[in-house]
Image (cartoon, rainbow over all chains, first blue to last red):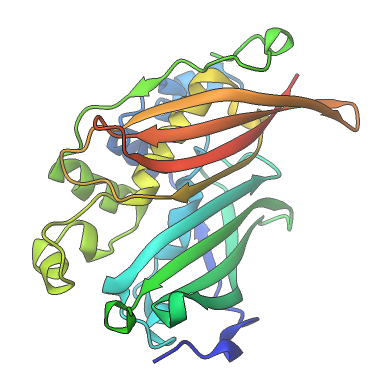
Length: 152
Length: 138
């Protein structure tokens, strides 16, 4: 069942979250980070940061920290097991740090298909805005939906 | 921690970042730490139900490794954009190496911007991520 293109332009539910120091340190551990600026508050402050800095890709996860993060995909009629990550782009406008509260707002910006519909693409643009209303990060993502049964 | 911005030149190679083989523990920890609980990466039963032989690594884990490559080389606040295309999955026990090369430098509105071509490749040469970052040289 192809994805209904009327989804283009759909504004998804925003996530409002406070970035936590402990979570940032856990993320640093999980990716094997060795630069203490990313997990040691003393080192971060010595480097001029007000708190632990949020590393380049961490904010991607903010949208997933909700009870049912893939609900919007299911609502498109898509089985999450057949979704692959196609592309991801971050555009940075200001640094974020532990303690910052951000509003993460995704919008579905395109839906298209290739190979006679055996691959569908869902494009989202997500803004990350600080409590002061300043744009901090923009994320552009392409998800690829495989339809093995539709392959020629 | 950052490159001497004034000395950066086209063709410069960033110090590569070679990671240990990715274990299932790494996948589980990254799922928890990143918030991406997609079971296709951590639950063999789900992977098999989708016709796969095994779970595979989160693409964003490799992108996070590339982020380490960048911030090892330049102050994070200098990064303007950072983008990748995920071109192959990373299997369990895959051993990624992140590399970057300065491909161009231009001055825009008085700011020197360098484009860094980025790749993540496995030990067998498979490129799993390719992309670039634009950073301010200051």
